[in-house]
Image (cartoon, rainbow, N blue to C red; front, side):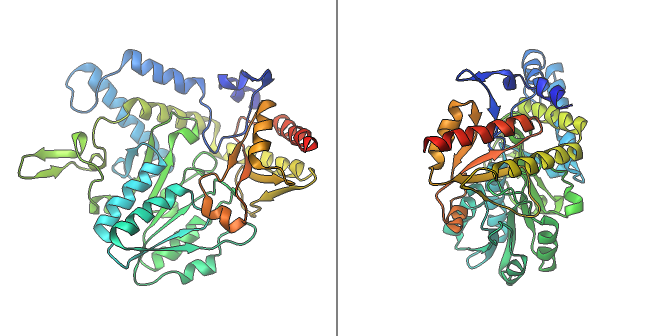
Amino acid sequence: MIDKIRADFPILQREVYGKPLIYLDNSATTQKPRVVVDAIVDEYYSVNANVHRGVHFLSQQATNLHEGARKTVQKFINAASTNEIVFTRGTTESINLLAFSFGEEFMKEGDEIIISTMEHHSNIVPWQLLAARKGIAIKVIPINDKGELLIDEYRKLFSERTKLVSVAHVSNVLGTINPVKEIIDIAHTNDVPVLIDGAQSVPHIPVDVQALDADFYAFSSHKIYGPTGIGVLYGKEKWLDAIPPYQGGGEMIQHVSFERTTFNELPFKFEAGTPDYIGTTGLAIALDYVSAIGLENIAAYEHELTRYATQRLKEIEGLRIYGEADNKSSVISFLVGDIHHFDLGTLLDRLGIAVRTGHHCAQPLMQRLGIEGTVRASLAMYNTKEEVDALVEGIKRVAKMF
């Protein structure tokens, strides 16, 4: 099965510096199967036309593909309606959209939002911008030394001024799978809605937004084998109806005069301008590809691969893993002895091994851990135990140089 999957990704057959590519940077972006790229090329060559308002055949065909993609996303995360699926440029824009629109409608000076220590900058900075604009306060859920949220401390952060909770489903540094159902339930007992950053969860574990009872859920196409520049904001219809548009122009309008504008129905109210209708097709094809393999199968395989990688890495003298939660996804962040993470990553690259180094857009988390950055190996369904072995041997080889 793994050989068949790998054959679908042409880039995995290439060499880097004369060595077979070992791609372990999947948390940053995943590689794309041939079926996704072929679908993108085919649409440009045979269906390309602007969507929604054209009466001609190509426009109608492109519109059907675009809205069909919305239906595919709806089914993939089990949203109640396609009205709840807003296409954005990715998780970051989805969070920025909500920070602006929800903040404008529901938050005023002195109100509070709860986030966590392990958030990506994309789930910190938009709220800081809102804080600067409106004078809100940001409260932070602490973590333990294993990289798990302290839920009892989370409960204590609520007050009558708390208006929103926004947390990652899976940490892009620690790999921690947060108990988001419990987080949502606690928030709802306080009548507070919740946004879940699903950038690192949707590619690895099944997500059912209705079962979670999430109010908002965001994810990116490029992290689940789809094209870059397209993403999703799921929102319960009652919330999306209640908040104002993020941008103006094009598709989001119903009627415009110089006196006033009325806005389009959901989800188009939040989709100003020509959408990336090619990208939405690519995303839909990627989701269908993943669904055909089965997210349960992917999760089980990646769990076993992560367990194996963790055991192998712990054989290396002086190696320290950051993030050892009991419930963890396929991300392993580490340091070795006194070797700087940048040096280790650079030398592994010369061996054909692609890992990520640095603070991973999570500098507050690095401060909590007392380090500047890590080397991060992030695994996907097309990685193998042989590649893990090569990573381990590569680290040992580099460590000898120091």
